[in-house]
Amino acid sequence: MNPTRRRYLRGVGGIGGAAGLAGCVSDPPGDDGGPGDDEDGDNSSGGDTGGTRPGGTGGPGVGIVSTDGDVDLPVDFGVEVVREAATTEYPPRLRTTLANASDRRVRVGEGRGVHFEYVGDDSGALTFLPGDVEARTEPDCWRLTDSIAVTEEYRTFELGAGESRSREIDLYATPADTDACLPVGEYRFETTVSIVSDDGEPQASAEWGFSVALE
Image (cartoon, rainbow, N blue to C red; front, side, top):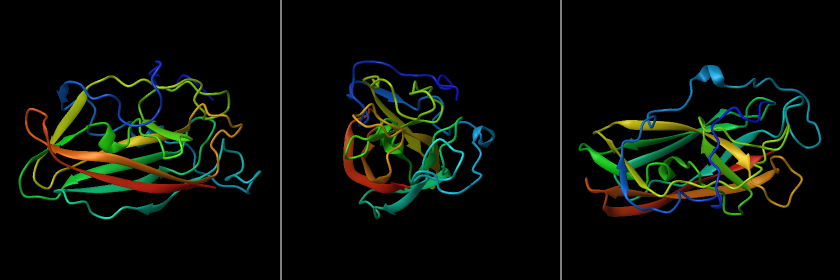
């Protein structure tokens, strides 16, 4: 495994939600998607090994167990598995999508949190990082060696009527007191999405989340 494949954000902050929110940054570069599909790892399967699957990979497979329903906002959420199993080259990967379900433009914040970038699960065992971030992990393991610090800014982006935006996110274990690289079990992730004014002031907000299983 190449433990320095993606750019690593290092600091004293904990792993979890989308960071302290100060300032307003609109339409950051790269929000229209992550790395191309040619970076995806091998999804070949084999027999179960030590309670994980498939054999020959670096850990368990991830599946989406449930997603929340619609929120009382003019946007729709979506999430799908892009790369089910961890390999020696890549961690599991999901893709989140946010779509404008209205007939007028909307501005959304916080731009990273709504795509679950830097969002941890309820137990603090796992976290999602952007697919183009380089993370320092344990050798042959997708457990982070340090906490992650996120820049303190409130990012927003605009969606035209009927427009959608997707991001790819990779799943990592946090530096918790466990020997598991990616601990099996069911985990819930939740984030806040806000409809904001052009100057970044929240006008309406709602919570949305989903659960995954590692097995």
